[in-house]
Length: 74
Image 1: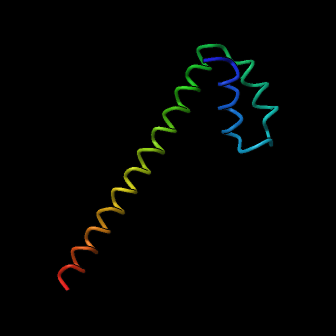
Image 2: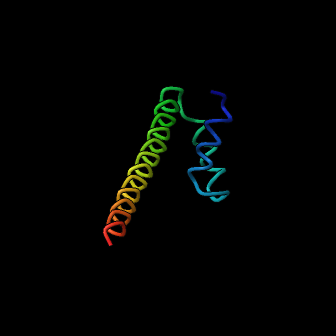
Image 3: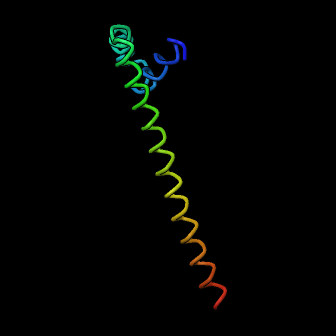
């Protein structure tokens, strides 16, 4: 992973241009171990969001199946 990838992730986490310069300065001052830890946490956050979205969709599918089954009985 290149240095720009880490910075991109940090910029994205700030929600736009606001605070980007501060995050860049802080990112550059972090040691390699801390950068890896931060990147790992950012990946974990993305995984958690995707898992939550999957759970949401599964619930939605179950609801649709319940409605379909009820309509089929009518």
